[in-house]
Amino acid sequence: MEVFVKSGSPEKQRTACVVVGVFEPRRLSPAARDIDRATDGYLTKLLRRGDMEGRQGQFLMLHNIPNILPDRVLLVGLGKERDLDDHRYRDAVEKLVQHLDGTGSMEAVVYFPELHVKGREIGWKVRAATEAGTLGLYRFDQYKSKVERPRRPLRRLTFCVPRRSDLREGQAAVERGMAFANGVSQARDLANQPPNVATPMHMAEQASSLAEEWNLGLTVLDEAQMEAEGMGAFLAVGQGSVNPPRLIAMEYQGDEADTKPYVVVGKGISFDSGGISIKPASAMDEMKYDMCGAAGVFGILRAVAELELPINVVGVVAAAENLPDGKAYRPGDILTAMSGKTIEIINTDAEGRLVLADALHWVQRYEPETVIDMATLTGACIVALGKKAAGLMGNNDRLVRELTDAGDETGERAWQLPLWDEYQELLKSNFADMKNVGGREAGTITAGCFLSRFTEDYEWAHIDIAGVAWTSGDNKGATGHPVRMVSQYLAERAGG
Image (tube, helix red, strand yellow):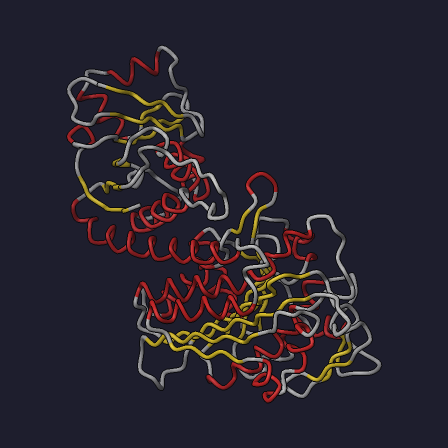
């Protein structure tokens, strides 16, 4: 779908559909009032006779309204005006686009950027609407033998801004919103692949395709090269699978070659059975989503390249498959990580931190400005925060605060958890430098503490996306979190 921005009166738009809002109870938005005046109170009369109350999620499509140019007018219920916040605004745009896609309106002009959203300016409203509208039409159906699609799908969406002076800001917002949405779609497409397709080798192939499309540098380490680097923790995770592990690095250069890059690292466990510490069968199919952190890296690099940000960014994917086999690593094993630190394995289902440990040490060679890792790391994060926020930790408060702000800006929210030294005691081992788990208490925090031992030489933040990376049930699928959060952070570092 194409997205544009313009200004102008709703009654004068030559378009298949104009979209305006109605607040509860039966209060017209500014654009709706313009149409009402041009039609001698046509909308007011409809509302008075009870055709629409304005509740959130209500729709009323009107045809052949006299004295105006649009073929149709879609009234969208927005609830109470004082309650229109970030979440309700995005949700309204997503739902209206899905509704339009089945009406035969192949194009629409939407007057939502004029609405008052608490604390948000015109650029935010256009960008958020662009993201929500584009992602509202996202589908992953490539493995279905029969796909039902609208006969006349929505192909063009135009957001109207109040003044002509808003057009430049609005156009920049559309461009950023489209780049973010395309990055999210890239991440979702990869994460939604079945695990018999999305193996570590497949991720390496996808990285090659992305690098060719967007002129990225690419490095892929195979098992022999990883062994030469001393990646004993990483290799142990993948040794029980016939699908060999890969370390993948994609390099975007938007600044001088000697400028320190921002590095993003993603956990890429293509399928996580738990290994010898095998998981229960219930919902194990969803363990294909244990590579959502890696998928996020792909999406972020896509967004950064599309926006041509004037910074250097390196995206690193730690890809492996965790299966039980005669060669699989075991509880009780002691592994030596690339850093030289030794790790006693208590639970083979705590494998993500092992591949990340070696990846996070390996990225030191880039002398990074900052390093951000993202991972579906702990079920404990879902217990702590549910499915509404990611867990966020780091060794630099400024970096954590900037990521938190970027999450608030994009709707991919995160909540900071402590990394106090007292928690490090829970990783103490009788036989090695550390254990790979700290017990039931504070599981998300002790996982972050584990990673912190491999990130002491640079500014680092860890995003635990276990609760937000995918949805279950009838709407099961990857979300693409935290592509927008991290892309926003990088855009701000680039001066945008």
